[in-house]
Figure 1 (cartoon, rainbow, N blue to C red):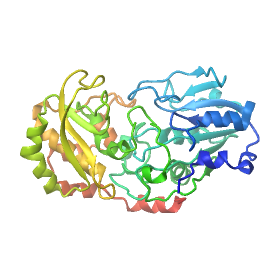
Figure 2 (figure 1 turned 45 degrees about the vertical axis):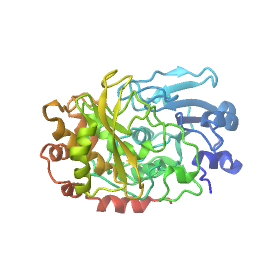
Figure 3 (figure 1 turned 135 degrees about the vertical axis):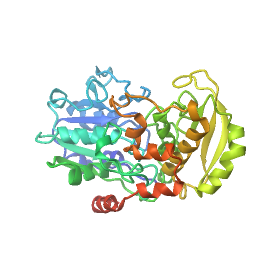
Length: 394
């Protein structure tokens, strides 16, 4: 059975629509489509007419056409809808009082990918914080966690390493839908609540990966073109904190990693085959490749590296695989390995790898070549799991 998203539920329920009497705004992006591929903004124009007064866009813009971090989007008036489109990845990540003027109901329809180092959940929670003591109802149209809502992985973010890719004490693979993130915020991360409603999906189960939902995959950010990329993302995104290419400028970004100094076949045959076996990590294969980025890191330079192929989604642990691969490549390259320097996601002081990891301890684990078994000590998740159990909707 095909899953119905929160947008589908709203679109098909006249009684639900009738509960929203005032002016309406929408925070959305390219992936905000219903099961017929119709964009939420088009649906809202049909449902609410002249009461649909404003659009907001997250990182990468309303059209999801802007690359990479700290590349901002402009505000504009949309030529078709003839209403303002405000960027929440501009001179501000928080909507201003002026942006929120004249709004009674603000709907949020964003496809998240289930990883802490992805900014849309923080656009949502900053919006919730801003609307404290405002007479604005926030309605989250829920969507699937594409890497399932059952498997949780990685360390809890340490408060000293907060950034726009990590604001809350959650693990790297958090296991929540975006609606559940809103509920978690209201219960555990704020002292004052807002008028919040989450419109649940129909038919979604926690063990589902995205392909199980039978929904259309529309890229939620420019380098997540395939649903498969959401599961390799928690591994490859770690390399954003290095001078390795994560495949931007290729046809398979965030599924591959490489560097001009790597001879992939030699490294694979002489070393990595054995190390992968020793690690006891499962559910994936590393394939040695050569690729040529057309933009971003190592533009027009040949890179040797690896593609992660997932052979079993249920046993694949992307965070652990990413940390393992990072450690192996760090020690293989030696003096040619470089950690990326600040700024990164508006943090101008701390190492990007540390704000991605939400700690500096994992960088030390890499540098010290500590055993992979030691990663288990970072995953102290009992309290988080109890919190998640208390707000689960499915």
